[in-house]
Image (cartoon, rainbow, N blue to C red; front, side, top):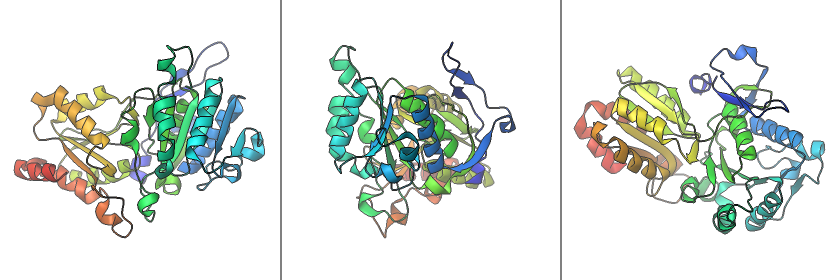
Length: 369
C-alpha cells in the first residue's frame, strides 16, 4: 500500500479568486510546500464534503443514516456543523433519494446523494438512467440536473457477501449523460469528489470501501480539484500496460513489483474516470508496450474492461504483440466464503505479466480471462 500511495504529488485544480475561475496547479514539486494531513480515505471524503458545504450554501448532503455519520462515518460532523436542513436522513428508498436529488439539482442546487451500498443502487436505476442522464438532452439544454452527485461505497470488503460487495460500474458506463468516477486513494478521493460535485453534469461516484480505513496518505487540507476524464500513469514501464481503477490499483501495483523481479517492466495506469474515459493515455501506452492487461473486481463478462479492450483493439491492432487480456471477477454472484477465489488477485495478474515472455502462456491465460 505504501509503495502506491507514496507516489501522489500531481496536477490538481485549486479554486481561483473571485476574479477568475479554477486554476491548474502542478504538484509534481515537493508536497512539503502544502499544508497536508495524514488521512484515510473516509476522512478525505468527509473533508471534501465539509468543503463542498462550506463553499456553496446551496449544497446539500442526504441519504440513509447520513445524519449521524453514515455506515462508514463519511458524513460525521456534517449535520452538527451545517444543520439538519442541509444534511439529513432519508427513508429507505433509493429511488426516492435519487429522485429527490434530481429535483433539487434541477432547481440550481448541489445535491450530494449517498447510497449506503452500491449493491442497493439498483432501485434507483430508472431515476439515474431515464431521468438524471436525459434531463438536459430531452429539454434541449433548457433544464439540467448537473448539480447531482451520487456517492456509493462499492467493491469487496473481505466479508460482505452477495449484497455488500458488488461492483456495478459497468451498468452506468453504458449511459450517455452521466459521468462515472472511482478514486484509488485518499488524496485522489478528495480532489475527484470536489470536481464531481462542481461538475456541470450528474456524476456517479463509487468509493472503494476496502480502502476507507486501509488507505492512508498525506492529503492537502485546502480546497483543490483533480480534473475528471484524465487518466494517470502512476508507474512507467516498457513491456506491458496495466489498466485499472479504485482498490484494484493496489493489487496491480503489487503485481508490477513481482514482475519487476523477473525483469519485466510494467506501466500502470489509473483510469480514475470511467465515463468518459481517457482513451488517448491508454492508447499511447499500449502503442509503446504492445501489451495490455485490464483488471477489475466486477465479473469479466460485460465488465468495463471489455469496452477498453475493444477500443484498444480498434486503435492499436497493428501495435499489439499479444492478445489483450482481462483479470477480473468471476461470472458468479459475489460469494462469501469463496471470495478469495473470486477476486482478481495479485497472483492472477502476476501470472499474465510473467507470461509476456511466452506467447503460448499468454494466449491460454487470455482465453481464461
